[in-house]
Image (cartoon, rainbow, N blue to C red):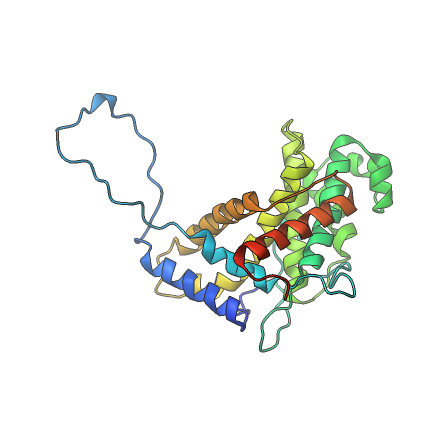
Length: 285
């Protein structure tokens, strides 16, 4: 989980608050918490005892994950920041790399535009691959016939991510996270398409926003979840809950998606993140 075991989190106010609230949530989660499997009680009629009406435990508040948004710098007046192809350690299937990343006292440097751009390229390429748009792939430096000849969706994903983010290299935490998000969104689009349900441009944008929030949150939460006194399933629980809540937040973003080109997805992702920034009350900092 998270990008690097050596990273201990952002040092600014939002990062500290995110980790504090994640720690409080984990402290309150019952040991070995898992959602109960649904049961059919038709053969076990009630014995008349009172029904347990206590609220469900162990659920993370969406407000906690909104603390990720200030960790994503908004676009500066001079243009996008950090939007070039990045390095990082993506392996087949979108696996995280082992680079330690770079940081200063403020923590990792993250730009919303950088995530939006690399993920936009990867998502647009995966979408073009699924619908057979060779021209769109060529604009991204990829050959449709070559990709089809690979016969392996994971290898196609790796090719797409390398085109979107640049070749593998040791790099910053931001670039590792960008590369991971690009790999996950490309793989998701391809898997959905292979299952006969190619996602719409809006679904792609919302999934991308969710992945950005999820990956940044997991990087920040990693050290907390790895504490020795935590139950064995803490990592799995943290990933599952953060993934679900990130999807909720992405669903709340206000979007205007005009298509599935690189530019359209990139713009929609960045704009969607800005609506969440306004929801949190940050404005443009």
